[in-house]
Length: 247
Image (cartoon, rainbow, N blue to C red; front, top):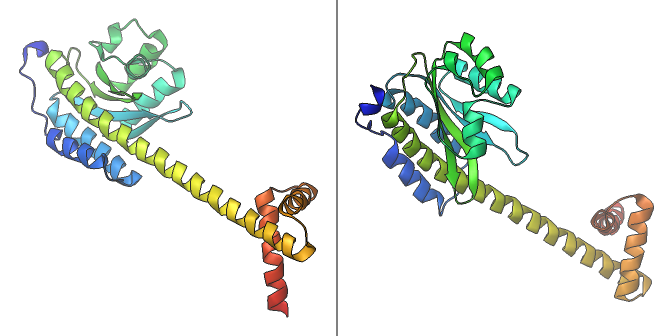
């Protein structure tokens, strides 16, 4: 029986741990993260023995599911079926945060619509593990096999170890992405503030008004032109420069 096997070696365990540790202080490009996920599914196939396909599903901020990495097109197609139907072992692992094992697709009763359409793919066994960290569940890693009963406790242990490392990697990458987006928004806010302050200074000098009046003039100009105060300020600041160049 598969459940009596010794836990399989995990070829990428050390490498993933090292990458996750680096991610705590460094920003890896999204392409690098995707490359690591591709390596994960590549190593998952030989590490799990009878696996015919493996993949990683991630959920984005809007709740949409995407197969970020897959060992083959059959795996992508099997995943797409679950996304389309809104049910299946991978989605259950992801939404409930639990490892899901399907011993025989043809005898499965938990997801009747999925089972009916999954049989033609030729996969008989499925094992899905969630990518869980303290921030929540980020996705799931799953493996497919063409024989029934292909996955037992040993394979579940291996996939869970993969999932733990991948979850840390994905969580750290997303944290860096959020920080980077926040930093860009902050820089944009500072640029807008500087433009508005510069425009107010020009109005105060040109019209001999105080700061409050200058800001009111800027707001009125923005409303009249149907733009933001920062855009009105940018246009005002650019006007004297254009006149100077023309002169």
